[in-house]
Length: 112
View 1 (spheres, helix red, strand yellow):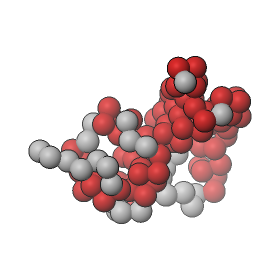
View 2 (cartoon, rainbow, N blue to C red):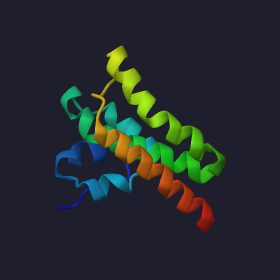
View 3 (cartoon, rainbow, N blue to C red):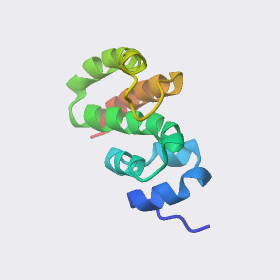
View 4 (cartoon, helix red, strand yellow):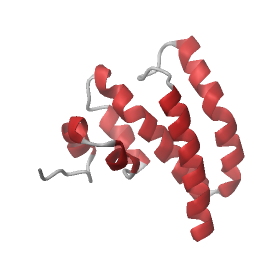
């Protein structure tokens, strides 16, 4: 199957056939925009990888952000659970992906 993963529309259309490995490679902006194009019940499929991409890109751009982003991963999920207005349900997967993004961002910054 030919999948267009270079646009948020293509990601939204292919979402159910994408693996975690596929989603982990997509930039934050595309994932963020793809979330506006999928039904509410599919938000939880994208959100962990959006969190990962956000952390990865922010830390890669500024490694000093690693500590504040890592420190905010769990409290953000707690906030989402209390507030209840989030597009996705708080999850351990979002926590794990967020921490993975911080690590990837640090590795990327070192390689630059």
